[in-house]
Length: 223
Image (tube, rainbow, N blue to C red; front, side, top):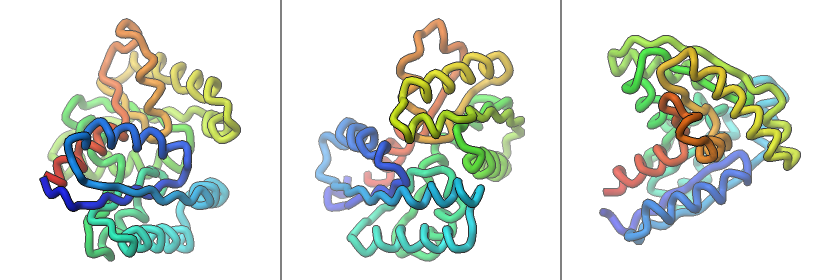
């Protein structure tokens, strides 16, 4: 492993920082690879307000990624799925790898089954995630069907500090969707903790989220 590498995490919510810090410690515990976090929650607020990406927001995402590169990152991971298309745009403009947090998860889901359920708490995330699923399935030469579920109001609960209401909405959607698909992906990194609280009897099919798979992918890239 290249011990001198530095990873830059770019977040649109400070609520994601502790989780990625913990995952980094777990998976890079025998490494001297370092990391730093950059947070700008005004980005996701503007995406929600505009109901998706605009040219102005995309430019801001590119600027944020460029700032991470300027700060010395050898690898940059953007942890917000809603701005995924802008992240891909930024990737083509940087001198270091720029990664979408959800691509390793999407690739894993495509390998697991044909009928893929997508659960999100924002409409602005469902579109980019479904689009990525379709494009990656073509590249991986796999035929898939996508079933979307929106947990309306859950993101607002999270932002207001009501984690319990947020988690309950996601859990209810999971219980319902499991009967219809082969595998479920949680479209936002902020949803990952819900899976950890499901019992074995409640988890009838694979349910995957992006943070752990993304950090494992980073570990491979640093090897």
